[in-house]
Amino acid sequence: MSKPEIMFRDPKTPVDFGRNFVTSDGFKGLFREGMLLVEDTAAYLDGPGREEAKSLPRHAALSYASESMRLTTRLMQIASWLLVQRAVAEGEITPNEALREKHRVRLSAQETASPAFDFNALPERLRELIGLSMRLHARIMHLDRLIAEDRGPPEPRESPVAVQQWLIRSAFRTKR
Image (cartoon, rainbow, N blue to C red; front, side):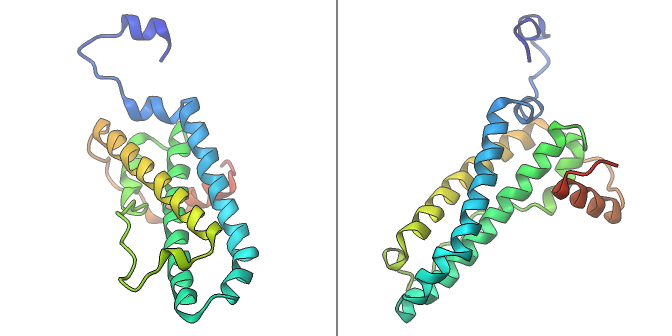
């Protein structure tokens, strides 16, 4: 919202945080941060992380496998949420359509590790990636709550096939 719009807007009409946020530079930075974390994590898990896991003792290797799966799941939730919000920002879907997608993009609270889990036994880079992903996940969950509060109830559902087509187009950034 530009300064004149803010100065002359009707004070009885609330500002739509979600609509303003997803078109902001702040969201673009968050999007880049999230996608870079996904790329960095994939590169680590497919390369150095794989080698580091081979040298871990059995209990630490089990923790590594478990925590890398949690990390991957968390990052896929983050990436999915970011892609849906970018689609709103680019006008590919409406905010209410994004709200309907919420059941597919579940930003769930992260479960804690098992009692036998030894965080310090994990390689340093994996611990760092876990910490970064958890902080980003918490920020996104907070933003998601703020955005959801601004949006009304979802519109009637559209075809599941259309939703899948939209997801494919979004993933590959193709236009109709």
